[in-house]
Length: 162
Image (cartoon, rainbow, N blue to C red; front, top):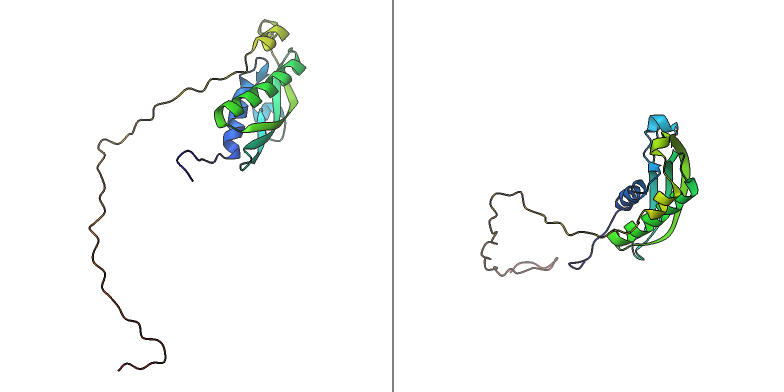
C-alpha cells in the first residue's frame, strides 16, 4: 500500500450515512423500544461495499416526524447520503434505498414543512483536523549496530565427515 492508500469498513460508511440522514429536517431517531421493531433503533443503515471499485450500495430504514412531507424527507435523505459518502470517503454511491419504517408524532409547533426540507443543503465541506500526540516525550529509536556474519559449512546428508 502507498502512503495515501486506506481501507474503509462498511461500518464507517453506515455511520456517515446515519449522520447524513439525521441532518435532514423531518428525520429523527427512534429508540428500539419505541420503534417496536424487535430491538432495532432507527435510523438503521446497512452498506455493501466494493472496495476495489470504491462503490457502495446503501439500504436505510428511517423514522420521520409526523406531520411532515414524508416523500420529500426520504428524497432529501437519499441525496444527503450520496453527497456525504462521496465527500467524506471518495466512494461512489450506486444506489440508496430509503424505507420509512416509522413515524414519530410531534407538536404542530415542531412541524416540518416542505419548504424546510427543500431548503436543506445536502452539501458538505470536509474540514482538516489537527491530530496531536498525547505523548509527553518522543524519543528516536535506533537499530543496533549489525554484527558480522560467520561463515558456515553444510555437509550433505549421507556424506561422512572427514
